[in-house]
Image (cartoon, rainbow, N blue to C red; front, side):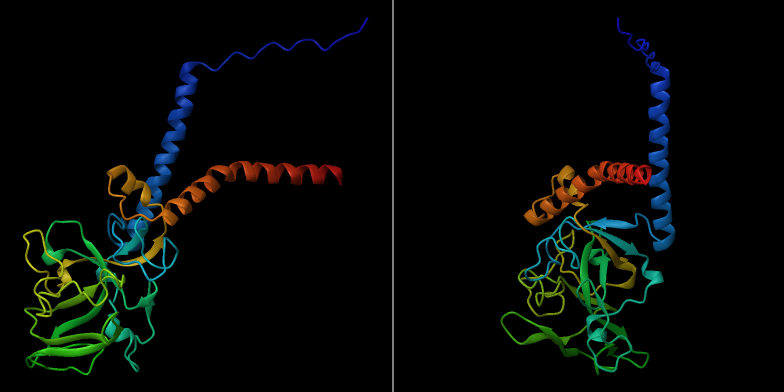
Length: 285
């Protein structure tokens, strides 16, 4: 006659109330963590929301397809308060002898800003700053990063290659006010086709328009929402998918996003497996 271990009685299941309390506690912790992160980012950047999602491909570089380093559709970009940042133009970053010579942001010289077209209420534009027209105290205009000082009209050529003709050139531009000239890094859709093509008199048919259909002029300081800082690639594609604005998101971005989510979900299992192996190894020793 064999003896077996007595059958252990089943543990009574948790009550509905206990289960609800557990879920509420976990949800509160998750919400608290999100609030803590957002608050920390708000304090660090001085602006809220502290991040923006890139919707278009106007900042993509040649041969770039959802990779890290350039600003692609679906990326989340940390935004710094412009009052906390000294905006460096492409002209300053490429002028030898300039204090900011050699400075780069997101794969090219100069800073990337987020601005509102003529100060309108549409979705802000995230583009690179090429140069700035600054009012001279004695009259005329200065352009930091170039030899131009006190000129009545701005004519200059930047060390910015164009696809079909030399370098980017601005000719006889009379600024209506102080401000930046900007463009996207994508040389096919933007590049030398600057945002202010019509406003600078270069091409009245092209260039960005504001919500009223007017040509975008030089970007005033008060129109600058923020300065692009660190990049969190791919994650913003989820928001674009939910809002139905994912047309510009590349196949590579979707692949990288899927892989990232899979790794995040698998990380607890990988961690538990590693801990279990370490424990077994310690017990054997």
